[in-house]
Image (tube, rainbow, N blue to C red; front, side, top):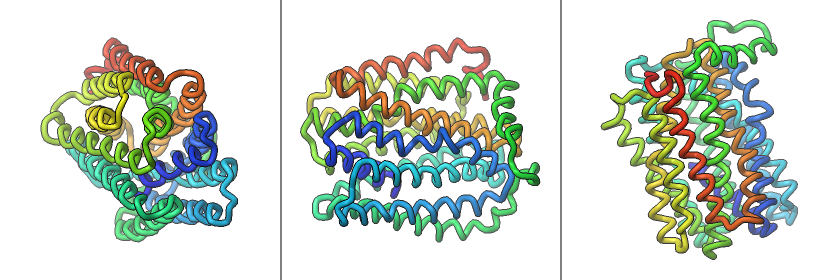
Length: 380
């Protein structure tokens, strides 16, 4: 919930400070760039050490970093460059969490139930992304923007306390624990994907798909709501909440009806739906239209996330899980940095509706191409 509130507050703050889509895209890039710089090493670290302490350190560090943002706003020091530096630091500590978290799950859940387990985790995440923006939209009616960052800080402290209850899971440790991480450890993750071509194709498509889709999701949507449709920060928060509602529906559909499908097929269907529904924003001329379409768009996203996570957990050996999930994190969050910057620049010279149409068609084609790649569609 805190992450959802933070993402809304950060982008809206920069739009308020600068009114410039390109600058907003660059600051958004700074919030995702650490995945490119540190993400792979975070995976190696997760394979070499106990995963729970890594998760605890990540949470407390992010809490302390994000607490500085409301302070500089109240002091009158809220310049886009300084906010970008703090966003970079917060995200740097955040790169430690996803590989450790995803690597911990297979040690707690039998392989036969991984798809359903990941569906439940995805449902919890989407519920948070529904409740977080909805809470932000309501609170912004009578609280100022800095309080959104304080709520994010508090969310990290609460999560830190809850993680302490998982101390028994600390025994889940990579079998390769020992010397300090080396470049060979880092490259072993990439070699693993090369030795399993279907998984390698999946990762390549993930990179290309996210290059199309993530920038418009992070930068394009607030530009559409604020500049094209003259909406408020609360309007944007409710749009984000409705996307989470669609994702929540999608997670429930996977859990209840689609878990028997081959995970590779589910992944490709999700990519096609993800792209095609974004292309329809070409005709978004009112906030009600955006709100309806964003729910429909959100339904396909869990198809991708749940199937991709389960495929790696099933097909990769446990000692490699941290590195492989760090590569996934790199392909999603790291590529978001580049995609955000490109979207901000594009929105300065191209109508935002056409930006959505172009990236939507490109993203959908990733799923179509994937159907012809050897072994990916039938991967289970």
